[in-house]
Length: 229
Ligand code: IPE
Ligand code: IPE
Ligand code: MG
Image 1 (tube, rainbow, N blue to C red):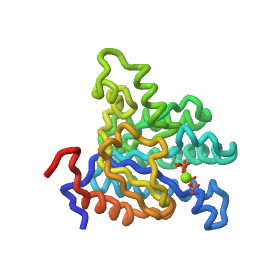
Image 2 (cartoon, protein in one colour):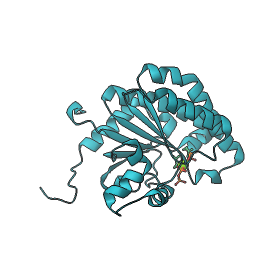
Image 3 (cartoon, helix red, strand yellow):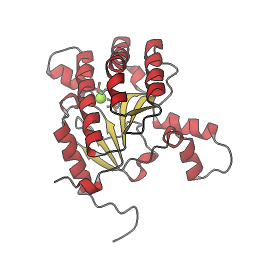
């Protein structure tokens, strides 16, 4: 049973398996990403219901540019479609949208929509929906070091990461779907003491029930932070 008194404040999700889902359903990869977007909407709703304060999703990595131009433009077109169809509801639900990553190389229409989504939701104080776009931990750390002034400390470096700038705490738990068990350059610094929950479910098939099960699994872990009982 889920313990409602021990809901994590911040959950990170590596949404993986859209391509394999598409292959299994014999549809183009972009159709897999579209199905993944639908799953993402449901998980955001569930996260809000559970009282999670920050949901951070890995949507496009600094390495994902290695994919075909067709797939990349398909992903960003879906992002445009998502903002156009969801922004009103996000606002209605008091969701604050944050973006992590260097969005400057994104297609113009995608950049336009995410700028609008961030701007339009900036005063909301409900769940923070943090979307990682052209995000990579290594790039984030290099950027932080470049922007840092003053003493070199863990605290100061943390403040200059996207998460620090946006007031996002370290994730208590990181979920990765599709059976892969690696970080793929997601929140490496912030994950120093995160619990990892891996599930074989492909992202488009990831349901609110499976999400709840993953949170339950997190709650069953014994977190020691280097100390002892
Ligand atoms: C995750 O699904 C979405 C992105 C990385 C954009 P994939 O597209 O990586 O799906 P698989 O891993 O090929 O199945
Ligand atoms: C990680 O998935 C990135 C996102 C989910 C956006 P990938 O599918 O790109 O990662 P690898 O290549 O399997 O490590
Ligand atoms: Mg993948």
